[in-house]
Length: 256
Image 1 (cartoon, helix red, strand yellow):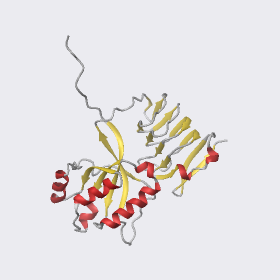
Image 2 (tube, one colour):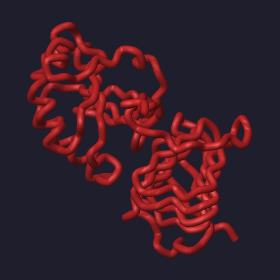
Image 3 (cartoon, helix red, strand yellow):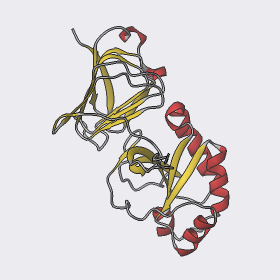
Image 4 (cartoon, helix red, strand yellow):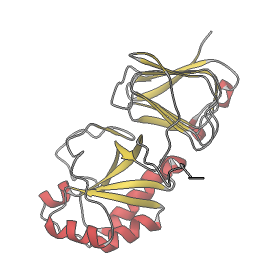
C-alpha cells in the first residue's frame, strides 16, 4: 500500500519582525540602547527575530564588525534573520554567518515601536527598532474566514503561541490567551477576555481602536505607541473598555 502523505509542505504566513536601524558602530552604545528599548517591553522583544538595517550606518561610511554585532544581538536574546542596506563586504560577512540578504522588502511599509522619531538637527540615536511584515514559510497560519472586505471574524479561542493578522478590522468572539498575538491594520474587537498582545493600526493608522470586554493584555499598541501590562490599570479588569490614541498617548476608557 502506497503512502500518499507528503514528506513536507511549505506554508506562507505573515508575522512582524523588528528591524534594527544602526546609526553608529559603537558596540557599547548599541548595547546600552538595546537594553533601554528591551526594558520598555521585555515580553514583546523576548526571543524575537530581527532584521539588521545598515543603510544609515553606510551613509556615514562607518565600518562594522559584523561578527561582533551578531554576537551582541544573540547575547540579548535577539535572533538575526536578515540584513538589508549592506555593502558588498557586509553582505559577504552576513552570508558567511548564514544571515540572509533582505533586498525585496526595502521599500515596504513599516511601523515604529514606541514614540515616533521626528527629524531634528541633533545627534542620531545609536539604534532604533521598528517592525516590518515579513514572510515565514515554517509557521502554519490559523484559518480565518473573511466576513467582508474590511473585516475578519475569528470565532475560536486564540491560544498561546498563535499569531493572527487582519488586513482590515479584526473581530474575535472568543478569548485571547496569554502568549498569543493579534494584529490588525484597522480596529480590533475582542468580545471576551483579551490577554496576550494586541496591535491595532499596524501600518500607522492612528485612528484605529481596540475594544474588549476584559482587558488583561501583556501589551497593547496602536500605530506603534504601546503600553505593557505594568502600565495598565487593574481597575479595568472585568469591564468593557476602548483604547485609542490621543497625542501619542494610549487612552483606556471604560465603555458605559
